[in-house]
Length: 202
Image (tube, rainbow, N blue to C red; front, side, top):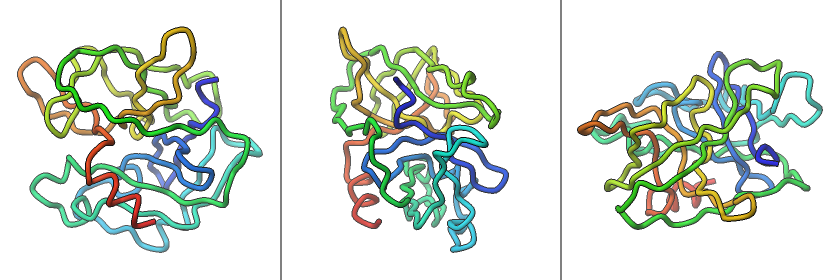
């Protein structure tokens, strides 16, 4: 099922979504842990992170460590292009792990699904995939027909495979509502040095 590796990320009053890309690594958006560029990722914040599908579920995991793109913490001028984080938990086995895929072409739009949950922590039924199309424009994905819902930020952007459920992640949904023409920047691709640098730091 689509939710086999997608979980809610709960950090204080913030709720987002994330996906396991390794048995002990969850990918999400930086603003789920550090709501605004220029904030701090303290040990207290890291200890408060809970990875769970719904409250009361036995499958819930406390963070051991977490990293956020340094440009987000530094409030760099292009910080919204670095709205990514990784969370380490004790290894979890038996999940349908996602794989990271390149999405290099700027052509499109391409049909995608965004997997995630809304902020109602008491229900799994609210985890309905968002469907729409994306186009790659430089360092972001833009869309005319995807609108992010609260709690879905950090969820994986997936290009469906024909005839079967795809486990290939090409990006994550972020909170970058910067308008470009009639489109809105809705996500970040996972193919460049930003993601690879982040992965090397955890």
